[in-house]
Length: 176
Image 1: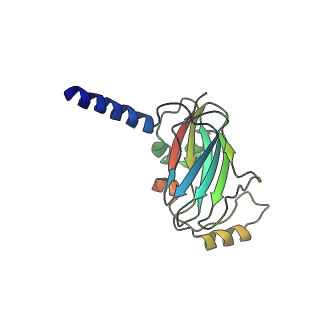
Image 2: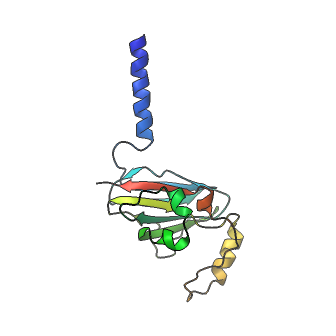
Image 3: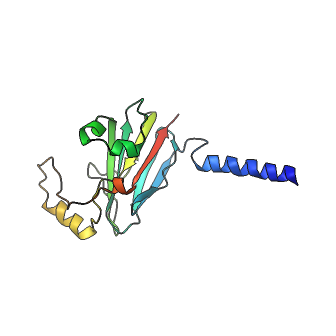
């Protein structure tokens, strides 16, 4: 009986380790869901060439920004988000893209037609949403409609705590 209990404990520990990101990198299409204020479905290990899609199941508008973090950076995303903007920006090796989704709608890629973001290079990546807390669909659509397409500033959203500071941040590593 004791041996069976130990074996069961080992199996449970191994299963928990795999659930926390151990194992093989995930490839193909990775479907990420944004909630009020978290990302679901972001695996710890991702294979090169994986494509991320994004769906919003929250009450607010959300975005999924994916950036590659510079090699050698060891601080947690929570620590990086506490840095002044110019310091945290310097830790971004590459901006891969942004997908935006409203509670009722389709995912939009403001930089193109493809509603996916593909990761190719090995390294550490962050997934974040910087939209402000309380951004509803009507306010979002009004701000987008009123935005100057020639301005680098983008849409003027109301002030609010960025979703990333409320926990809407995730990390993954791309491994071959």
